Amino acid sequence: MKLLKEEAVRLDVQALNAVDAIRISGNLLVDAGYAEPRYVDAMLKGFLEVGPYIVLAPGIAIPHARPENGALASGFSLVRLATPIEFGHDKNDPVKLVCAITGVGSNGHIEMLQKVAGILGDKDKHQQLLEVQNFEDISKIITF
Image (cartoon, rainbow, N blue to C red; front, top):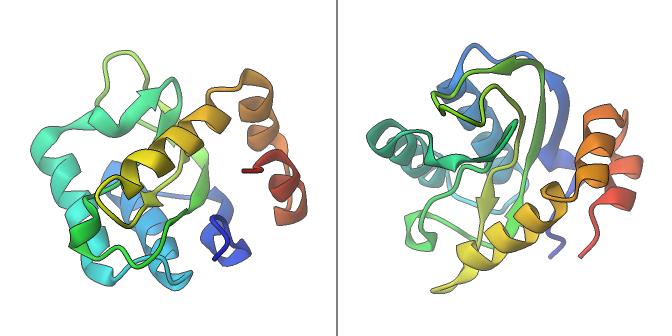
């Protein structure tokens, strides 16, 4: 299974707040067949209980949950927000890119986190993702 499918990408999305942005990115995982709906609930619960730990770099949130919470396959979604949103992180807010991840197996979500963080941590690729207009260009930037 591909790690990023076109149906898991949305560009210039209007989200009301961090919870809405997480829900949008999680529902894309479900739509793409990477996760069950309860996985989205687990991502939201983690954010609401633990806080903005998912904001891993300036402008980037990577929501995720443990595989046993409904992960079906390894993959991720990419949501570029039309307007950056505050997630409550003291250094890395506001967030413009929300990339929900899912992985299977005991270390699947950690492996996906490393892959996605590696791409988004590349300043050139990060900037390109802020500017691209279609999935074809995204698939050229995000390669595994």
